[in-house]
Length: 315
Length: 315
Image (cartoon, rainbow over all chains, first blue to last red; front, side, top):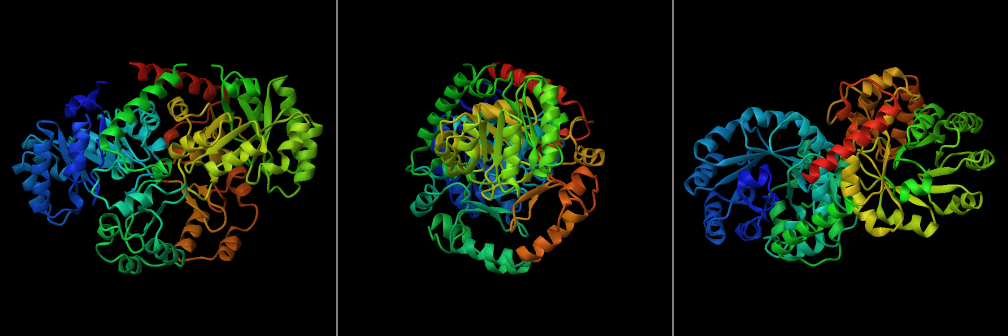
């Protein structure tokens, strides 16, 4: 299984684990890299010095394997963060939630490969102009923060494939080899898997969060907070309050006040299922009733089920 | 290309044209059937005697080929409508927007094959219990009326595939052979294509509607009217008014009043782009800048691009 994504990152399988807040620490990233994928550390929920620690531990654990860091570009201390990433010789950075123009050349000058996450083909074209090495196109079904366009992965991947010749990684709704193969049929060369890795043993999320998300049915996640930043959430008292407020026409200011600070940590990391913000993708419903497994088990299952789906297509 | 869908309906390709209001008259249905797919007449926008006329013309035009009628089960004169379908010996009925229990046995007793449209695996399981011959699973990206769960085609098809052993047709976001192949990778055996056939030469929609929809960008359609019945709409003054009202917390009653009567006819059939209700799928953006082509061209393109995508997967 060799293509532009495996060659770009020198990995065995074109499988990336999403760099998710309060989920993607060094344990998950290292486990995915050790299993042949590309593990990402999620910097969005880490103070700069905490990130440095995670990078050091990940680097040691992967022993030469390729790992990366996901950096949301609205991170408040972004200069410090990028400085640490360069000092620690992180080989790959995935940037998101901002313009790919700002940091790509700077990272390239330091020998760091850059992928950027988009939710539209207009931004994918900007990635190509900015010189990034690969683009991640993430659809409406993805967990957590999400594009305003609400374009689903099925509609987004072909559009991005037309808009750019860059190596293309599909994200949003991909938790099985069948969905991976579907993404390839649409023109993607790799997949970024979020939800399924968020619910593995190595994920930093609390057990309560994992159990909650492994018990969701179809239609249980909802994309809300559209007047602020659209975010896909699992059920809970906080989400009920958001829905009620939005249904009654709450203003952005009212929603900001309702949201407050630190809710994602409270929900995902601390396991407060009532008052926390529970970010997870729609595809969680496909995992219903299962227990957390290791990241290596997930990678092996993705490879196996993709192979089986391909064999089925040929019969 | 033989599978359970082609055998069930005795068609060459497992491609169904959606039975869309103000779009799917006998011309479109007959053209799709003549091209090797299964053409559906959309009864939802027809008075019973108008439907009878469309059935007669379609039957004559297809000369033995299989065609069908889509019946939304909340149709006000449903008994009369079903009576006409039986009298006219329509070979296939697709039911939607209601329980598959009510009419399946009645249609089977008259030798009519039945497929039912669902937006969740819970309803797919009900279809199996009701004895339908095939299930259509339609995702969030589809145009017009839509499920409350907001499950995308990528997440929905695998869930429905697990919930039932019935022949499975994927719908929502499918306008190319790449997406058809993706749906097959996910477990579907056929596809129902709406948007792309709605914008063909044979579609009954107005030229103004077709031109408008062939000029949409990503993010231009939106799923609105969720407090009534979620409906995916293209931009226009009416939609702006709906969005404004919903953003301000409009009640179902206020939305019902704003909607009024006959807006879909006004928008789709009469081409009033300002005040009409413009129902179209998200995938319209992939067709941007093209002109309406014949339904036969669409069928041939779906077959060709599916074959090319499969060849690409094997390399």
